[in-house]
Image 1 (cartoon, protein in one colour):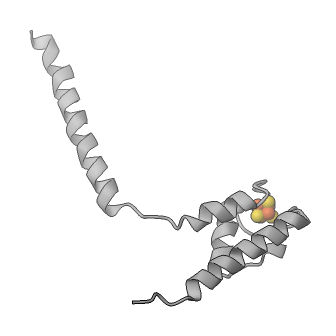
Image 2 (cartoon, helix red, strand yellow):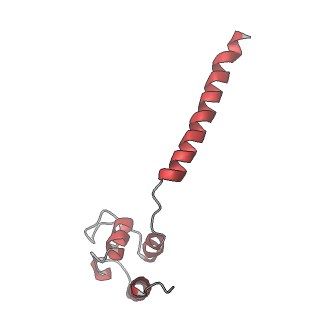
Image 3 (tube, rainbow, N blue to C red):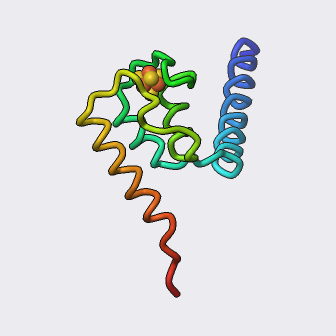
Length: 101
Ligand code: SF4
């Protein structure tokens, strides 16, 4: 009977820690801007670093923060560059619209 005690204790401990981690993640987790995913999906996703960032996701952060330009991405194709530029313009335009009451 004593052989079941350690797995039972570890199981209960794992369950309790799992619940704690769930709630810590829920209340203290950082919500990332969903536009980052959209921008990243429009970049070539080669993660080559030619833009000066560590990868396409970092470049997406840079574009959204207006710290970089789409042209900094060297391998992006012309049509994708145009589409991304338009998408960014729409995002920035939406940002500047004041929230009505
Ligand atoms: S240059 Fe373009 S493809 Fe390369 S990491 Fe930067 S955003 Fe990604």
